[in-house]
Image (tube, rainbow, N blue to C red; front, side, top):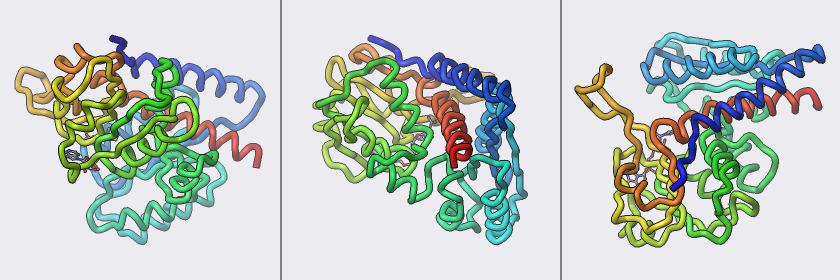
Length: 293
Ligand code: NAD
């Protein structure tokens, strides 16, 4: 069994990007600049945005955090988005989700300039991805593809079951795994909460990608020997033995399933760290595209 080590791989990728940024600086070029918009004070969002900004600093990017108050109106947020779209100094930006309930998330995502949409959430970028065009791939699916590539996990002709159909993970993963290419060329089943007899599909699967957010959902009796497991799930589960009072659980019962798996991502330390690395990679890509434009 091989552990797909997202922590190590993401550090390798960050080192590669840092080397490119250092070379840019040496040539007197502008370095990539990522901005993040955060509305309100949701604890998890504050942590996520904080680690994105820190990661930027570590690899030599410029970063800007726009932290807006919980009562920011939709109009005020859209005005900020327009400013970011117009600001030539900013190569890419993200709007941290979820947004407060009084703001229409879809309206905001549609307002983001697709050329600065380093999260890859804009429908223009999603459509381009579906048609194999060069694009910003959403960071989590991009990170999974990069892990599969760097560990030479065989995907061609394999049966791949993706569980979860969200716009940011499951649905794009199903598209990427079925695309021509390596990784890719898999025969994909996209399963979700209305799927009947899920085990029938997972037991036949060579690759299972879980993105449901149900702790330890996938059990050993649901998979076959040698299966490749990509666990995207991140859920806080109460655990009084931990200093913080919780532990982070994936969608896979790791102890059971890893005994049967050929490749597996741990949680934490698998897909999670890859997400930030690929956001940085998209920002570098945005800078390069701006330079060439
Ligand atoms: P979501 O929460 O928007 O949707 C969950 C999906 O799972 C739905 O499509 C639903 O149909 C499906 N589902 C729920 N219960 C099911 C069941 N019993 N059987 C089959 N399908 C079922 O999904 P999301 O935003 O993609 O998040 C999924 C998980 O991935 C969460 O734990 C989230 O925290 C995590 N996540 C991790 C990263 C990362 O960087 N590692 C990034 C994004 C999301």
